[in-house]
Length: 198
View 1 (spheres, rainbow, N blue to C red):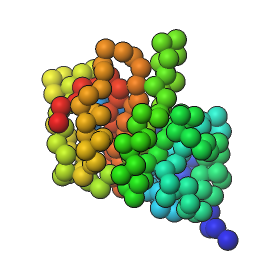
View 2: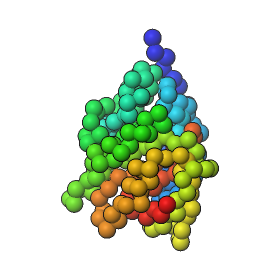
View 3: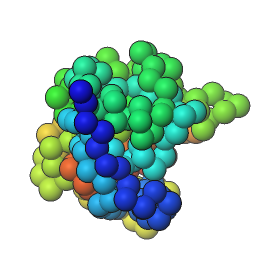
């Protein structure tokens, strides 16, 4: 029998704290924030768990990468604490979560995610990626809204398909995918409006 893991100790206060930190990450791209109010669900790390606890609910369509789809502890805890409907195809997702173990599949995943429409650009997906480090690996220089000049970040050891996608995004359109890179309890965000030079 799967053990249900404790989530936020104080659901209202902890979710508000995490929301404020996520807002900082999204409004100031590349700024590292720590989410320290809950632990992992199975193999899904604490940072990604807290993103979902804070931003997802029973109306948020959630897609999980292959290793997470087969992790019963992860699935049971997400169903119990988040109650987001799980979808089988990335094209149906509001939020998609890519585990470190599944990073090699990102080349197929990226073109499958919703980017929104001209009428509803907000319907573009948010992709949460678990990376191995925010202190080494790929170096990216970010610029755009929320950044005074430039901000240099390290993104861990990422597949070349993701690096190329980040560099090649079309910023002239409001359509796109928002990216959250998580390492354990820390994360940075790269919204669709952020220019990335690698």
